Length: 156
Length: 199
Image (cartoon, rainbow over all chains, first blue to last red; front, side):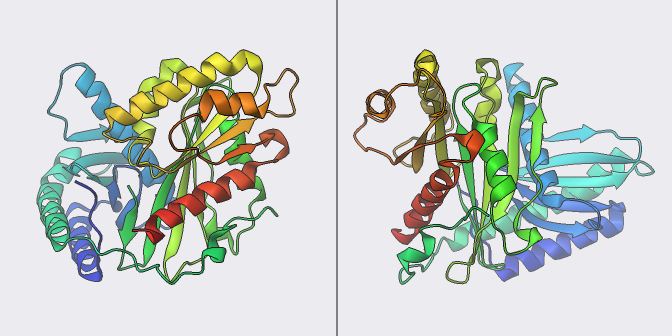
């Protein structure tokens, strides 16, 4: 199943869920990331962080570890944790297309992150199902001038 | 698998540069990153390279690049390379996940022909393992290293690598001199946009 098209209602819902998660867990930053590496939504303090790169690295790290788990016949793979000295990262599976990334200070515990993230994961998963059920609408690019895309990128 | 976000009016597409070891995949990305014209600094992200100590790609190189807004949609491309070395085949599969378009970077040197063919076959196998197929994914071929000695004629490369039911666009390039790099990128982005035009 492909990642669903999102509308404003979905993003508002994600914002509410992630805000609640940040408030309760005291995580610094939370991100919903598609497993091919796209950042879908973020909430928290990302002031000095390159979240696009974080999302890509997080998804690929998760996919690589998942692949590794499968090689040793471990099929129950739903999370991975990187313990840092100042900040740690917890990545949780949402569904077949998506993960939740939490970055939190080491004054917090991974156990509390997992505890508060569990309902958030369920709620995000449910909203993605709602978005999928809504179906896809084709992009209306029909009257686009084809010459606009002859050279999208130019050399300086 | 493109991401269409109607709320933020964004279309996100993933392009993977695939090819044998040392064919110039990373050089292509470096040249685009260094030379692309962007309206503002936010349109071009930082280039991330997960490389070995000897500067060979270990996992991937990556950077995000925004194109001009098309019909109100901000189009964002994520450019990736895969590691060329065969021992990293598992990571190539991971990087291919969710791919929308592929640039196959072939090495034009005669001595690399076997590797070109083998890597192309591996690419098809890896796509198959992800339930994807070249029939469904726009791709172009770049014959790189045209500035080297002992290179095969383009006609021969075409016969060897582009001899399928659907003949795909190809480009001659010397990525280290930034020749053919933008032509290749513009063609794959054009094919991707046309895929949506024709839906």
